[in-house]
Image 1 (tube, each protein chain N blue to C red):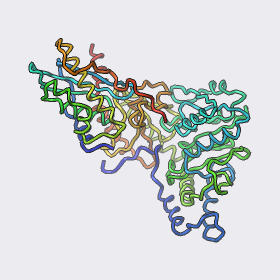
Image 2: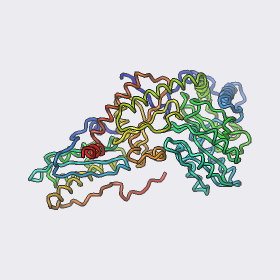
Image 3: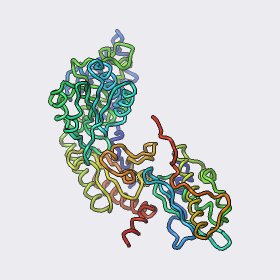
Image 4: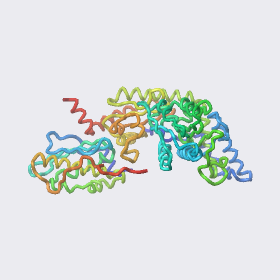
Length: 145
Length: 394
């Protein structure tokens, strides 16, 4: 059901772990729904993301999207990182099954949450960054069988 | 390990060579339609009748009480819908349990939309139905009680004799979904006061696509599939002759030495349970320890998610299953694990391993080592575990 890229990022996740004293950290998701992502960012004085690490509780797609998201934002400026959308993460992974699209949304949201934390800590505003939702399933309608 | 380790026998089983061999002549040799007049058809007719008789004997039922279907889900659908329609004039109340298979639960939802009232009886922390609640739920307009013989996820065996007695005492029909139990546990429909029973061939090393519904003589439910006069006019459609023959072979094999096989599976099961409990921290056995299907092992591992665990086990050639949301295609984890009181995040981290007598201790040792390694790896990845460790350090 998963692409080779997804399987690769799931079995050999990149940048898995923690950053001590991170510039920003964001946790999104909901244990109730079975996925939680945490992103750590290390950002230098030029607003460049020097390092990015993640921890994820979730399915194969959740792990793979977090791993890919860290690769996509590493080395980028915070403005560029904001442009890393869930679509970009999915494309980089050669697609996701429809039921797993929410995992990529979670990855995008996790980056935004970490950037939001960074902005708050440093008293700055990042243009285009909105306060992240803590739970991407908010407002979703119950499925009917 | 070089070879595949199959630990998902509750999902389906490998078709037994005896069943395959028995079926083969009925595809291209004795292919006649059992309803035909000529002799080519009568071979098939004889074969289906023989299979029906073998199955009837296995349950202490009569030949005329066994109706072939396409499988367990059809049997459940038929039993519930047709009984509801047939006894509607007596009442519109049905009692079932919170941990039934979706073939029963979703059929109940369907009936609910058509004006029936459904009471779902709770289970205790081991998944055993609360009999006092069942008794209290009975009303004058209750027409049917449907409780599974044994649960497909956590393997808990229900007090079927007691439920049968309660139903009989109140003159209420009793249906049991025995898809997981038939061929694994002895079942006597007379002794247990069962009025209808669903079973499936592919769970007992028979072919996929065939099952049966036992309907006690005198239970007046109508046909579900309309058409020809097959199955005494109650289930139309040309008989699945090869399926019935394969089913019969599987039934013979299952009931011949059932106790010895169950003992062997129980031994393997308890070995696996003991090692996992001892060697993996923060885990819990789900389901009753003794009132449990011989081949069922179900654990939850805290801080990790089931689908990840399954993919990693698959990489190690181990086939297993989980009650996590990701494996169900919805956001909610298994209704069974929630019903026994597990919080959502823990229910997401469940693992079901269902054995057959073909599994070996060597395989199980390899499985334990693999589970230990994978659970540790996934916990290192888990923010929930990180938080837990940090909380404990304080």
